[in-house]
Each structure stands twice: as structure tokens, then as C-alpha cells.
Length: 540
Image 1: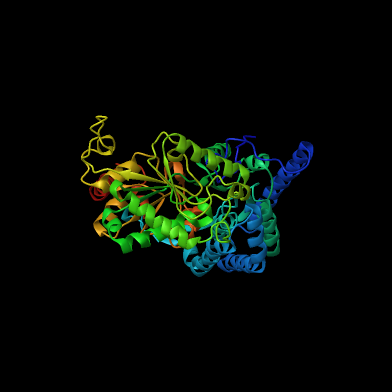
Image 2 (image 1 turned 90 degrees about the horizontal axis):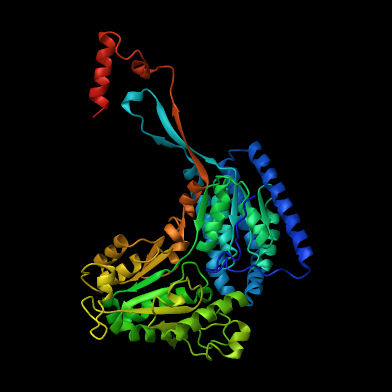
């Protein structure tokens, strides 16, 4: 069996070190893992058998599943909120409702409303050469879908793919992150209230269980997590030729327009929207703004506006219940090391909220890291190489396109990234395009022409104009990455299609016009005339 290494799948360093073992001896842990691996193999067989007995559930059956899921969420809301907070050490109940429960309910509502339309066979055109006949596409369930869930949004990133899988008529197995054990157990209990395990089952275990899970011969495997672990998952799936949807991450940039930054009202509004996206879950979001590109002379204005916004959001930072902690000591230490690396290499730190120093023992004990801007960053720093996944926000100041560093004799960003850009926006786009394609891109500016330039001139999994994060919550749009930030889509109709087989069906009746094309191809004047006509009409 090929094994993957899906440890801590939301983290940029998720494959770098082994998972922390649960309490008890290594023998006990190994025995528990063996039992869970045996259980999930049996679950896969049982779900396959159940699928075989009902390979095409009706729209009413699927809507009933979605209703059961909604009702179970309602019944277990408070338990799920408490479990998520326990796993984080503290996470705002309001954030959990906004970022996990609200989009889950909205996704269910959208799927129930549109499901019959998605399931309706699609009529397709038949060429004149093959008439009389008809063609259509029928969307069939794939069978058993595997879902691997990360730790950063352990509820929504389980429920969102589950909605797509159930809408498409599939059976589902869900592997929860070993770093959110309380949430995993709460979700398992919730789903047992709604479904038999031959319909939906939760698998719980450490890294060895996750590796075995990714190597199971699912009909489709959907993974959310880091690019590094996504490669392991894809390798494991390849042995079974299991198709995969990979929702990964990357460094999602923010581009600030000069015109917007020059207007105080627009600047303050944009800073609030940016701060909301970065502050949500303390930056532990796959589509969180990772760095900002801004004209160099406007960087101080942006830092001031961001500081005012964060201060409004968290006026008493050390006491607030609205700000989340870093998930565990390993992630907290990684962020500290990334920050220390940047400072050692010349970055300038700008606190964005009134709080003790980031290194204060009180904050360290609580794993609280305040929002911090980093200026004068360079590509040699880890903060500009790795997905940050935390509340650090590098701000890259862009010089005028024609500027040259006379002291060093170096050309500007313009000359190294793009030939003769016309303006700062061109430099910003070139900066983005010179790096791996991100999961999200954010542009702040109201000029329609500039919006079009950024939309058409850059690549990212998704994009917001004048906001952050919220494109993910739009159920009528696909969500997915590109290149190193992922492959495939889910949410809404695209999720239904991803987890369905689009089967093309060509149908003929008693009449057979195609007989005219049967051999012998040139036997007599009639056949030659017919094939001559076919060539003239169809081979143009």
C-alpha cells in the first residue's frame, strides 16, 4: 500500500515533522490506529455495497439527506462551537458561527433549492450526419467519496464538501484532522444522529491513519490542506487511479490602487475590509491576505489605516474574546520563527493593535499573536517564501516603474519582472505573476479599467474586488485553486458536477441514416455519389 503523509494538512509545514502522539504508550497508539484502519477499510466495502443497491438516488432522497444534515447541525450547534474553541485553546464563538455555520447552512439551502435542476439530463446537439438520433448527458453518482479535512476550519471544510457529495448522490467517508480531536468527536456524534455509517462515516486517527485513508481506492478524493501534503495525497491516490480535488493554499496577494489609497475615506474602508480578512481566525485561513503590494510612498498611510481598523476590532486585545489563538504550540513556534527570521534579515515591525510586545510572556502562554505588519521585506525572508497562515502581514512597497537605485546601480522591479510597465499597477501584477499562482487574489480599487486589467492579467484560484475572503462563501461560484494552489472545484453546481460522472448517451431509434456510411464505400455510382455528398457537406 502506498502511504501519504497528511500530517496537519492546513499547515505550510504540515509534512515537516511527525504528528504528536496521543496520551498513552506507542503500543496503545499503534493498536488504536490498526483498529481504525481496519474499520475504515470495512466501511469502504460496506459503503460500496450500499451504493450498488441504490446507484441513482432520487432528488427527493438527496434533498432528505441535506435536510437531515441541516437539522443535525441545528441540534449540535453549541456542542460544535465549544469543541472548536477547545481545540484552539480559544476561538471566538462569533467567528465560528460566521465562518463555519453560516456558510454551511447557506450551502445546504442553495443545494436543496437547485438540486433538481442540476440533476436534469442535459440535451446535446447531434450532427446532421448522424440523424435521426438524440444525445444527452446524465449526471450519475461516482460511488464513495473520501474527504480529508484540515484543522483550521474543521467544521465547514467537512460540511462544504459533504454537501457536494450528498447532492451528487454519493456515500461519504470523512477523515478529520488529528489536531482537532474535540471537533472530530463532536462531528462524529452529530453525523451519527443524521446518517447510518453506510451513508456518511467519520474516521479519526493520527498521521498513519490519514496516510492509509488517502491510499484507499475511493471513487473520488477531496483534500484540503497544504501544497506539500497535497503532493503526497495525489501520489497515494495515483496508485488507485483515484481522481482528486486538491484545495491547497499559497501566498494570496493584495494589490492596493494608488487612486484608492489617495482618498482617506476609501483608504480607511479598504483597510477595514483587509483587516477583517487577516484577523479572521488569527490569519489561519487558506485564503487569508498573505502580503500587500502598495506604492512605496503610500505605505505609511496604509499602516496607519490598518492599525486604526485592527484597534477598532480588538480595542482590548489581551482581554478580547473576539480574537482566536494559534491552534497549537507547533504552529505558534513556526510563526515565531518566521517572524524572527524576518527581523534578523532587516524587516521592520509595526504593531497593528495596542497590545504587549508579541514576545510578552502573557501572550506566549496563551499562544496569542497580535496582528503585525512587516515592512522592508525581501525574498530571502521566510515570510515571503512560505504561506504565513497567521497574523503577520508583509507590506511590499513598490517604487515608481522608472526608478533606478543609483547607489547600487540596480534596475527597478520593472526591469526584472516585466518589460516597460506603464505604471505601479503593472509592477504589482508582474510581481504576482512572477510567483506561484495563489489560491486567492484581492484588488482594492474602483477604477473599472484597472479591475479588468488585474482580472485578465493575473491568475489565481479566485478573486475579490474591494474585499477579502467572501468569494469563498458564494455558493453559486466554484471554489478551487490553480497550479500549486490546487486543482478542481467544488461548491454549488460545480461541486455537484465534480462529484458526479457526466455520462454522455447517444440514442437511436428504428431508422438508421448512418447506413449510408456503411461499406463498401465506393461500390457503384449510387455509393460514390452518396460519399461524395458526405465529403462536400461534412468535410469542410
